[in-house]
Image (tube, rainbow, N blue to C red):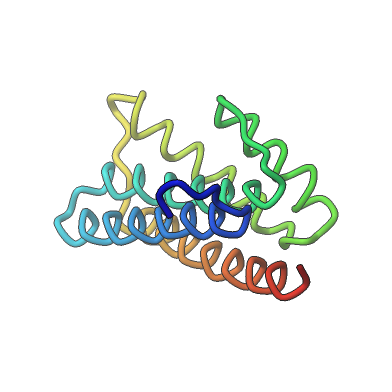
Length: 137
């Protein structure tokens, strides 16, 4: 699409593809027992999925907390996405920060797999959301 302006759905799909690639990286890191790296990539997969939804509105923010807050306010609170997903996103963010900034934090395999599953679950939800949006436009 060089020279063409991308539509909102094109941009959203691009971001969702990035989320899928990042999830694959998380799985590879998990399989190589790099649990901190796997948690980090799982969080970013979640983050890119959220940004795919926001791309439909052509909205973005510089800070992660603003992206997540907007998503929670406009998509989780009105239950476009389930409320439980808001909690899972918050947990993934906390674990990613612990992996990055707490030298003594050691993520468990179980918690790491939960973050990978959350990323996978959100990607599926976002795919469905984008399909519905593109059908209705």
